[in-house]
Length: 551
Image (cartoon, rainbow, N blue to C red; front, side, top):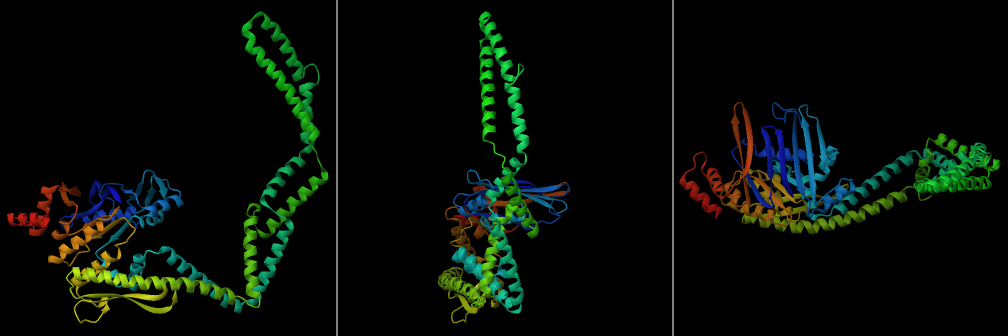
């Protein structure tokens, strides 16, 4: 859920630090006070496109931070984990800084991110339904998305798109193959020769690393032997060798220790040094006894390294990438062999089509079941919104296979008894369209996973007793566990149903206009509802009416 929105130097907002709560919250205020500015600012924190001109006059940048509580939001937590953003105590901070020239920076939990990452995580945090949502509902693509969102089966839809794309890719390749069979034969021979040459190398990356170690050792063998012999000589040979000097110092210190016991530590250190010196001599002698500079082995290692380098230069690949590239070559070989066999690529196309058909059939069956349930739910909501004899139907029509399945989805409605079901775009009345749109939204998001839903004046064109019903519907949405509904409204009946009521207002200080917002107490809430009921002048009658609808 959205816990806090901090806005600095944005449009007419100087600084706004606003806390939000679970449940149903309403935001009210006079036209132009800045209610929608809050939604626009939040949208920027969620990755929407920024423009120049949003920075408050006299400032270099606008700064917007949205804080979310992720309790119960497993999808958002999984996204953070997959994208390596740290999450602590269910807290998530999304920040957007916008500069005067329109450029911006984004941060997720204080870590720099891309705008697309903000947008991606934002999809699991907030859904915003704006005034123009009515118009988007007229599009069949939006209607399909609503039904699929109601279904809540994202994995099947991802597989549907994946299998369709694979089927189409192979289909186009089959067409290309039939026109270019000879080029595929040439490709097969080329990759086969390359893979055979690679196989002859008997290459593994771990062996390659060992070869480099061996080559370095063998190439420097004489220098190693000479150097170690020199070290042994310096340790053991002559009166000034390390061991000889150590023995002399040891004898002298031992004598001095007999005169002054405070030299005990120095005497012990010298004793250890003498022992270490002798151990070093034994270790180097043992190294010489075991070192083996095999010229034949050196030649073999260098030849193997040279053959690997030659292969890599020839095919423009790095040794560390060879194993991965070889797997790609092998996969392509197998694909080409199938394509060029008697069964040719038609087998691959057929298998891909079968995979698509299977998932598309599952999607169709789920859509059919969901369409029946959604039609019933929306009809019930329409009846609540004073369409007493209305009927709503989600119609599925068969189409040619596509990336979105084997059916198109269209919303049909009849608004009075005996009326013929017709597409919602033919419902001409703005008020009717508003109510139908709201009914669709409320019914289709009843099982939504996104915890925060924001409705920006979606109740335009609705009034009277229907407004109270709208308020009840929105209150139900905000009453679910881990969810909140925020509504910008001009309807007192809707605002009166909210659990928390915020008032947005603006004031002029010298030549500047500022927007501010505050959470209303009970007395202030009565005054605000009265203002919404009575207009500019708040009468005693309006106050009484406000108290009545607030209950």
